[in-house]
Image 1 (cartoon, rainbow, N blue to C red):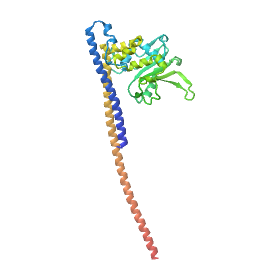
Image 2 (image 1 turned 45 degrees about the vertical axis):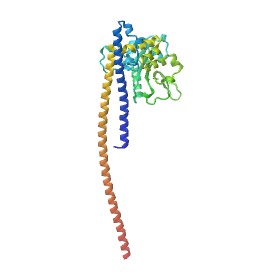
Image 3 (image 1 turned 30 degrees about the horizontal axis):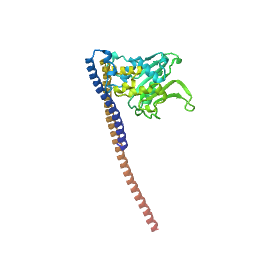
Image 4 (image 1 turned 120 degrees about the horizontal axis):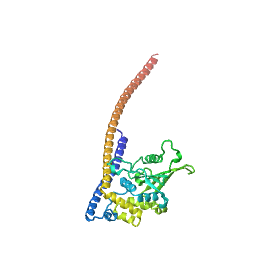
Length: 352
């Protein structure tokens, strides 16, 4: 095997290990934090019979067990709280609350029958019965994210039934909530990047039906005045909050954001909801383990194939070397014979 091949294989394996270890660390930390939340909840439950007090996030302290960056919890909050959903939609679209006449999750999860299996955890939203938003947390590195995001955007856009008129298609926006380190070639630093379907020469918009936005949680310093006015910066800080004390300070006095914090807290401590999150975490862990096993098996198979090819190449190289040696020997003999012929001709000429 060549040095370059060894280097490439090592790079692929190290990259895979890095991504998997990062995902494993997140799952491990989430599980530990959930255990702490459970213990704190049981203690408070034993001390009071007031349900409102038990489920009030103001009583929470320390590290947030499961943050809003957890895709299952994020979906729970948006699906279970109309106020939170409407608040996020307004922040992402720069809308006033009275401009939102209706908002609904189009892909609700049946939590009653959820058993820790794979589900699509992007939140697909219909706004005012006339617009579609697809919000997805992208908080791990995926080199194919751009291709995947375009596919998701097109799938969300394709809502027509058989024989329905194209005029019924609704404006569709895919919104990724992420960090720059998780994106391949993210471009210039921005807090909220917006992409449209434009003419490359004169920037004329071909259609207003398709858009793709990216919210970078780690680029708050790049936020514009409008991002503060729309409370998008506040939302980004809520996603990044790691302690209940930080979260309380962020949402204090804001009914919508307090609703988000309270809904987060309930999903952290209500046994049924916590169990679903734990089941999802176990599923991710199992999926990760199967992925790693598949990678290892694939790498072993690839090594076998490469070793076999290297052996074949070495064998062919040996054959070529043997033929080259034989050819060199023939050329040497021919050269000697030619020289001998020349000498004989000289002798014959001298005799004349």
